[in-house]
Image (cartoon, rainbow, N blue to C red; front, side, top):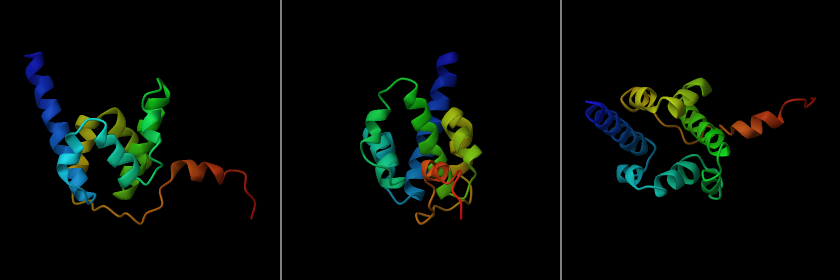
Length: 124
């Protein structure tokens, strides 16, 4: 029974990622190739430096990077940063919600979470 539930959840996440990659202007099959899928998400979709993929190998840092990457992606679909956190922590819930919604991808949205932190304390 547990294996069946895990299989169903895995299929839901894979299909949702496939659809989201297509909505983001990429081939859906790129979502199912290990490591390459994160390269595409980080570098090609979210426009972050390619070396960020290395950060996914660092314990604890990888969690923060994953959350930031999903927050970026959510913002490009017009969703909130909180929705992006949900995508990272509960992908089997939030990925299908986004994949099968009417939300459209907008590559022109500036969504660099780290740059917005640099605005703190600046004076006009």
